[in-house]
Amino acid sequence: MMYYSEQTIIWFNGEFVKAAEAKIDLYSQSLHYGYSVFEGIRSYPVGDGTKMFKAKEHYDRLRRSAELMQMPFTLTTEQMTELTYEVLRRNNFTDAYIRPIILCSPNMSLSKGKQSYLAIEAWEWTNGYMSNQMRIMTSTYRRPNANAFHVEAKVSGHYVNSILACQEAKDNGYDEALVLDSDGYVAESSGANIFYENNGVLYTAPKGNILPGITRATVMELCDELNIPVQEKLFTPTEMRGADAGFFCGTAAEVVALQSLDDVPFKKNWEDSLSYVIQQAYKCKVMEKPFEMEKKVA
Image (cartoon, rainbow, N blue to C red; front, side, top):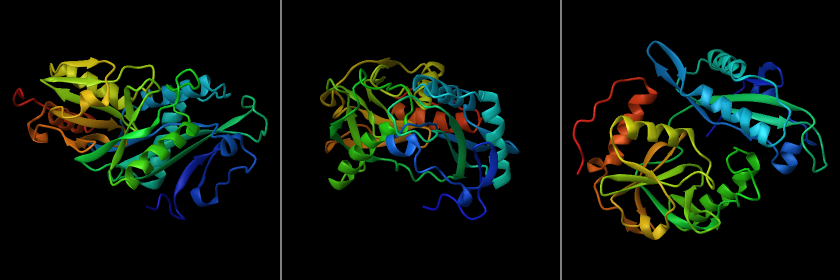
């Protein structure tokens, strides 16, 4: 996939520049130690224009991630939102994926950042990140220990763990990984949160050992609006295998159906599940279209 061309414009270190001409310092802490924080944001064609979905929540979290990692950073959520819309406008993007990232200046010591700068990149989007009806496996890799990292921060270095888990699954003939926390409970996929459904109730891992996703929070809002019971609880892969349905959710993934876990199929036809209702409601939510739940799924 080509993410940019010779004409693509990004925001980089205080100015709009061509992506092909932007340069990162080879002595940057971000390059050597994964010491950077980032977000993934979607924009959609809404009405006659372009609108980012929950831009405030994403940029508030980016600022919080920088704070947790002790990175000096002063831009406000409002300033970053305005800059992002300008990046979209200059590239004529509407249905797009946006990647803001805070990078740190040259520093070969293991100390907090001395200076940081923001890049905002974007590219046109069709959801090729995850396909519907995914076959997943329980990974041998675990999520980083919550006592060793700020797992609630979206830190670049954390995603080495995600690459290992995802590639292990693909090497074994699966589409994606289900990753456990350090205590052996289900946490998330390599890059999305997880829900499963049983007997008319949705379940998801609680905060503490997961990245508490903005899409995850949106799913819980939709459950409340549609009177679909949802519970945060610790659970094992054994509890999830053979449940009625399951799905991943995230900004890039949106809501993606799972077909099986460790070769054990989920029981319900996807279209007959409450999880399917959530998938359809989420599509309407991001496009700001009305949604009505036609029937209560048994």
